[in-house]
Image (cartoon, rainbow, N blue to C red; front, side, top):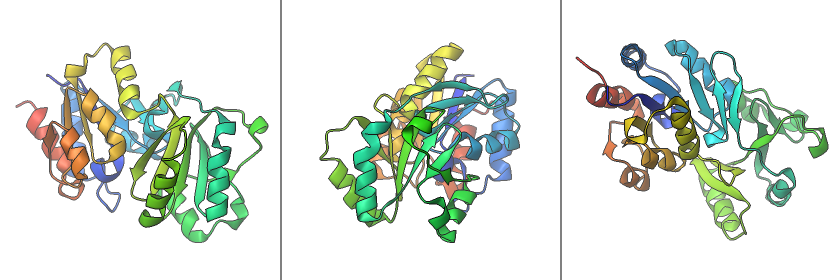
Length: 267
């Protein structure tokens, strides 16, 4: 089998728009795993909202979370690697969000923190619960016991377009990217899906030419260009398709299943 390590984005890629992992996709992934390939989810999600999908499929191995800021063992939930951020560097972004009424959260590898937890709307809580996350009240920086790996601003698409344009004019200490239409993420400047996937491939002794990656958004570009075969979903923006080696069907048409069948499934 040519592709020994296969990285899959989750939202907009592995899952349908209704957050469904289809039986046909599960069956195909299991068949290819039985042939010896390793799968890794490579996502902006936290471990708590990505590991359940690996377990549903019946896979061990690893998940690359928070857009590459942390890599976690699926079976033991041990942190294999994480990129720690400098918390005081986040203060200007937090002040901006407060001033412009932009919702934000701060993440360690396993825990998500918000300001004024009691004041969150039910709609916001429902979004977090959709991703299996239970936010906690944010402590002072000195009281954090685990490294901070990601800061996320969330809002409407046009609203975040303005935020992204404003922040793009700042001198950046962090890696800033759009991880979806409604999210802007800040991470350590060296953290990316591509960098984390490369570290994992090297750890597993797998050359880049034997790595396949499938994704659909701007935060997937680094892994699509690192992998020997980068596949973009049909629901991807044009820039993402341009960065890929191939394009498959959309996430609502089992594009992951079709790509795996075409490039990986042995007769």
